[in-house]
Image (cartoon, rainbow, N blue to C red; front, side):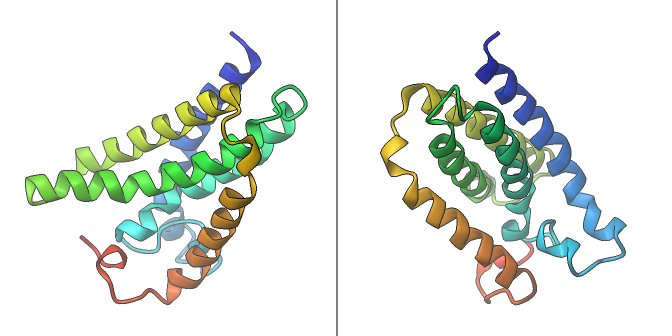
Length: 166
């Protein structure tokens, strides 16, 4: 197995485990204000987007550091894929719950797993194809903007559906 594949599989495992733990860490921390910035503080879809965003972001720093010299396109692939995986959570959730008319815990968990798998599949394919090499700036700006939104909206959410408990 090549190095990229190994780090991709490790990233999937890391993100699934850490993302799952992040679902509970805010409560385990005694509702610590700072912990709330990286883990869900409520059951809204927006807050659950953090389950993939922050674990994948943290792992991406490591993966990029380890692979950048051998795979010059890994940075752009990671930047894009974090955003992709994060936004797959509401897309899949609202699609299936809209069709069924309700949400189901098993499908919520499956939504997270599918989002992680697709995001890391995109990392792998985009790293090898280098399609996004010349477009690192836009996903980097979007990633920073999304990070800022998580910080601001964690404790000051707008009054729209994605910020409410389904």
